[in-house]
Amino acid sequence: MSTNPMHQFEVYRIGPEIKFGNLDLSFTNASLFMAISAITVLLLLFLGTKNKLLIPSKIQLITEMSYTFVAKMINDTAGSVAKPFFPFIFTLFMFVLFCNMVGMLPYSFTVTSHIIVTFILAAIVFVGVTIIGFIKHGIKYLELFVPKGVPIALLPLIVIIEIISYLSRPVSLSVRLFANMMAGHTMLKVFGGFVISLGVLGGWLPLSFSVALIGLEILVAFLQAYVFAILTCIYLNDALNLHH
Amino acid sequence: MKNLNEISARLEIAKKNIKKKQIKNSGSNAASFGKAMKISTELVAAVVIGGTLGFILDNWFDTRPLLIIIFFFIGVTAGILNVIRSAKNMHKNSK
Image (cartoon, rainbow over all chains, first blue to last red; front, side, top):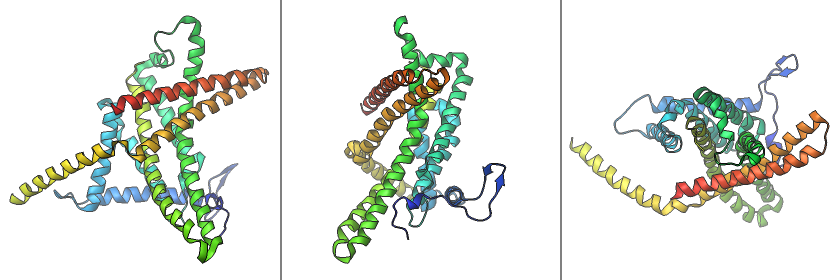
């Protein structure tokens, strides 16, 4: 195995090369682990809802808890108007959560440690929320960029500031998830490398650090999925209930 | 039916225990860590967007490096505004 801590983030092709003009659509390890995460979510939800018992089994309990967790989150942040968007936010939360968690398994690949993956997810949220805002409020949605009670002279500057603040949403959403996952996994690999290079005598200290770091990483994996979903709810709330 | 009554009694006790725990954990490390990450990335993202926007506009109007400087500072302002807003939101939620 390579000792380079960045080696784990390498994307390589699995199977035959598929090309459409300049587009490379080959199946990579990233696509494989995305598929694994999606199938795990589907399997969990399928098994959890197969036998509906009054006293839930463990797997049914997990499914029901994840449902109520997301439902409560949407209700608390965006109110009952956002109920129709439950399937989208639930899918987003479960997918990000399982990508992060599958990445915690040894020899696996963390899909969310690539900025293009997190940026596409954030861009879907951003474009979707903007479209919903325009559908719901029409041209009045642009009032989001004009806060009330600002003197006319300052208005051009304030509008530019508000637009930049609005555009920075997908960037902050994607960079947060990507940076957390990448930094955590690099750190784990570096400490793992210390264990090898210090040998049997000195390796115990970095090993104990590694164990603690894995606990922290599992926490971060859950937390980042949660933050991603809750910020989507907050942006949705801004689009649905226009107030400033 | 006796079985069901027993379960509901046990549920009540479990719920009470969860409430007690939640009060204790309200200032837990995990939540604070999430908040810290949220605020820091918000500041950085707005600066990056401001800089990029300035760079693109500079290329359009051939005014390099005037607009990138202006938009960098506007980005910083937007970032600080974002941080103040999310801090206000957290304050409202924690009350």
